[in-house]
Image 1 (cartoon, rainbow, N blue to C red):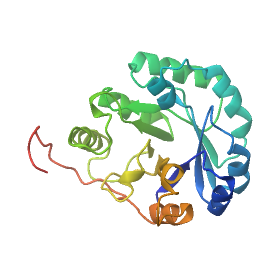
Image 2 (image 1 turned 120 degrees about the horizontal axis):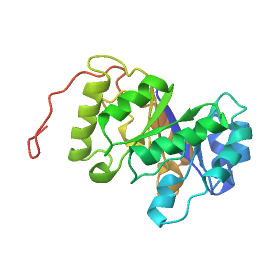
Image 3 (image 1 turned 45 degrees about the horizontal axis):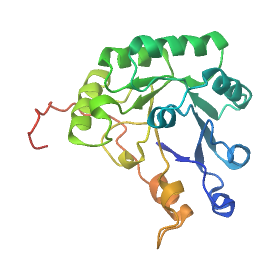
Image 4 (image 1 turned 90 degrees about the horizontal axis):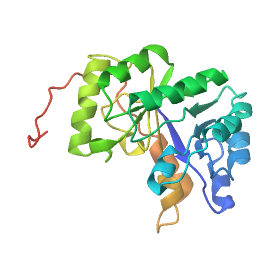
Length: 230
């Protein structure tokens, strides 16, 4: 079963209250809903905020993030995205992983960025119980043709014909909830951003997402060349 982590903050608070029992993604720096999510959520994913830092050009505060995570990780249903540099290289991100390890924090998940070598994904999956996948570089648009060619290549190497060898979390990947990629969990801010549209309710949206499940096993795919039809 794939878990769907619904991004916060979700406003007004009365709307958030309708989502008791769901899984939540709480971002460092925007964690006003944290206490409620911890008390009423099924599982909480702690997001390091790297995407927001990168998009806005803000300075990072990784020590502050790890300080914030430490007491929250006492709950075994809570896990955290290890600090990462979205447009960095393997050296940059391995250094941040070592910093997390040096703190001795539990249930951290490193990020493999899709512009990085696939060998790095294989290495991370051989070490960590949970690995996040981040769309980056020329593969920054989740689900487009370039993204799918790259993901097919990665899954062919990682899974061949079978399940993923570790828990894969697709960052910003809720739209892939019914797709062929064997993700154990996904997240999105879709409910937070769109629940106030006509005909929508937060609970209805979350229930629809949560009812969708991707394939549990990967079936090896031939690689398409640029411009070929799927």
